[in-house]
Image 1 (cartoon, rainbow, N blue to C red):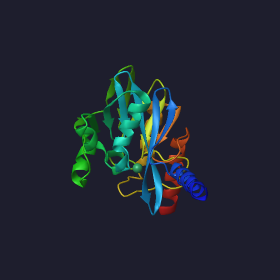
Image 2 (cartoon, protein in one colour):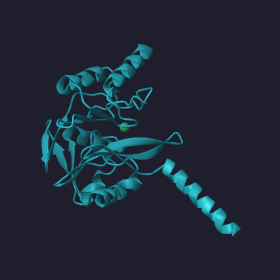
Image 3 (cartoon, rainbow, N blue to C red):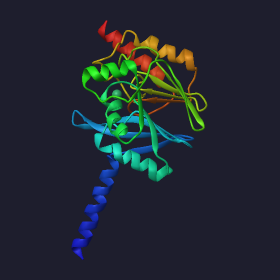
Image 4 (tube, helix red, strand yellow):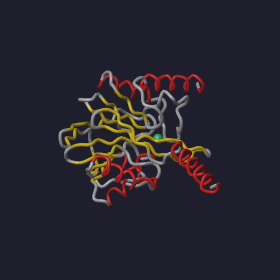
Length: 241
Ligand SMILES: [Zn+2]
């Protein structure tokens, strides 16, 4: 009797531990939109990265690929099981690995992958995974019953960071250009242009007004992340000037 009890305890302990650091999390956002999260170790602690997917009658669309390279197939499988559809299209919003790592995997699965020409140049130069198709200008897409557009507002976190705007639901998918209200600094600045970053954010605010949802590249998504990003830039500039 004693052994099975102990075994059960160990099992329940490991499963609750595993849930705390779930390798792939999926959170409904609104309507047909879902945020998915994977992690990578940053200074010994798992740090989350956000991606998004959209379910349409013509298949699913991925906005950025998983950061955790073990989660490419699990994400496709989860979408198939949960929504009974296949991923048909995938985008990466800048050249860093937390956006592009899965591009080649998706292409090999027959999924159409896209980045901008600017992202592709940087990916090629830095040895990152590249997309099959290139966007040369801001582009409007219609997939099934859904429409969205890509927008390059200027440099910030990276020279090539683009955002996606979904007008009907007022979703701004910002990627790493947008810092979560949970973030207390600008994070990885190795490819950043902090000087231009504020005008890039203001271009987005001018173009799209008040989004209902703002999705940052990492951590919690809430609607004042644009102002929060501007605040973090001001704090950084005050410290370094
Ligand atoms: Zn990032």
